[in-house]
Length: 144
Ligand code: RB5
Image (tube, rainbow, N blue to C red; front, side, top):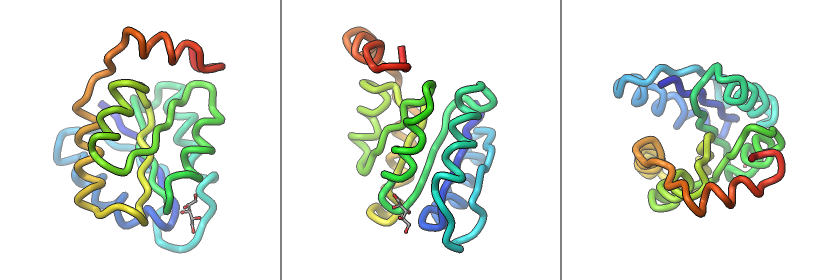
């Protein structure tokens, strides 16, 4: 499975460690930057990740910024993206089980690195429940 990952300066430190962890688990990763903690605009990194998920160049995505909201708002402008913000592992489970999020967004300034790992692992290991949740997703404009 190929995972794309993007971040702004606030998410850079966690991103570098999460990529190493993903690779150690056998995932292929594509890093969409940014590549330092120098201040940047999250939208410059969210759009390329979204395009890669939409095209199938990567199977799913992970995005990190300070609050997670800039990334989530930008990613969800794309028709093929369901980006879900998670700040604990139960929300990481639900965002896949109920929302089938194809991009996991995390608020790097508001969770520990250990929590980011737990959220990511839970999201990766959880399956979409389908059923009533598939019906609800089908009613999201442009996300049917
Ligand atoms: C950067 O200071 C911050 O605004 C950004 O990481 C994010 O929180 C935006 O939503």
